[in-house]
Amino acid sequence: MEEESLPQRRRLPRLNKFALACALLASTNSILLGYDIGVMSGAALFIRENLKLSSVEVEILVGSLNVFSLIGSLASGKTSDLIGRRYTIVLAAVTFFIGALLMGLAPSYPYLISGRMVAGIGVGYSLMIAPVYTAEVSPAVTRGFLTSLPEVFINVGILLGYVVNLSLSGLPSRYNWRLMLGLAAVPAVGIAAGVMFMPESPRWLVMKGKVDEAKRVLRRTSASDQEAEIRLDEISAAQDTPSPAGHGVWRELLCPSRALRRILVAAIGINFFMQASGNDAVVYYTPLVFKAAGVHNRKGLMGVTVIMGITKTMFVLISALFLDHYGRRPLLLLGTTGMAISLAGLGLGSKFLEHRAQKPMWAIALCVVGVCADVSFFSIGLGPITWVYSSEIFPTRLRAQGTAIAVSVNRLVSGVVSMTFLTVSEKISFGGTFFVLAGVMVVATVYFYFLLPETSGKSLEEIEELFEDKENRSKGREK
Image (cartoon, rainbow, N blue to C red; front, side, top):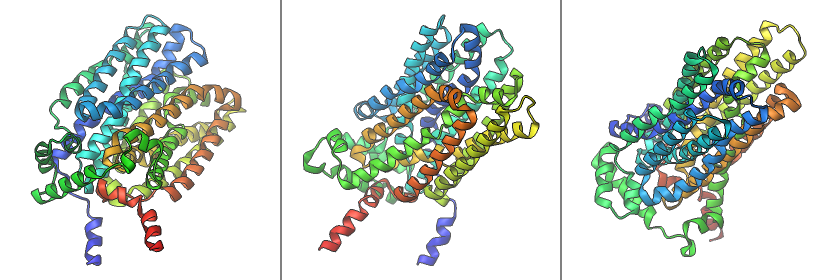
């Protein structure tokens, strides 16, 4: 029996087309964040030139979206429990639409910051809700692939932003950055309209007592009626599980049991290291990094970022396709190890170039390859797996608020890193900064190896039991 199950695991699981359509629609929301990251990397150069900004003002401009996305992340848990997962996605798109218009029409720096604040709230909502909705609608065998789609769309958005930068870089600097930022309003409208055709999450429907409606959704997202019934029974059983001592959701999260503490350590840890890796900052400031490396032509700078965007998108697609095949842990550990090596190589190349008036081509090539390798390994591991892992390990009753806490840590660290990257790099150089980030990735690899168990192939309800295993075994021994 065991021998027969091994080849079955090795086969790529069949996708349910309706579940795939739901996941694709929900994940398109992530294009908005990706587009902002990509387009801001180029727009920042022209905004700085047009509005005569200092390095600190550029850092605040870039990082403010991430800091204010904290508001959306924290509010998204309660909001999605109240109005549903689907309407929370619509709310995220509408909020970002308003922010994009404000940025595109901004006559000055303060107006631009206000647009970033509003757009940031929308980003906070979308980062939490897209993976949660997708995880709740997906069958266990394909959940890894489907829940990694938000990261795929983030990368598609980044690449789209790079292409827009390249296309508009020839315009006068007082116009091009406004067009770059304002164009984000276009996909926001399409996303809000498309999401209205999605069904609501079956787990949210069960939470609200709409069992018949949940059953209809599960039948469409499962391989058979029997599988739908099993999934419904698991959801209902998890929903009926009472909170310890009748505690409310937030009290349970703030005063967690031992099993829940392990879940929080895993979810918060992976979100912390995702942004402590410096990936967002590297993407935001890539043109400045390459400029320091010796690439001064504007078209050349934008062209190199497009190459990086294509590489990043290609690798996240590969990771998404094999997440359910090989599991979360192997790809996560491969990604963080590769990032540590890539960042060390990038630091070496940058350090060498700092002390040379003539920039040798091999050192410039090492920096370009180092950046591309860093973002590629991020796209294999931390990029997609953070969203998959965070959205699948919390119990149903705690999923929205638990994921909101984890994503809030993600946004806070992203904001801090983005708003200090240039200042730190001026103090210890780009090379020194990359060596520090390489060290962070070594720590992350050790952390993940010891504290993150494998969740591939398990239902969301079985994963909750996985984190309780040690506690249950110790109780069994006492008896």
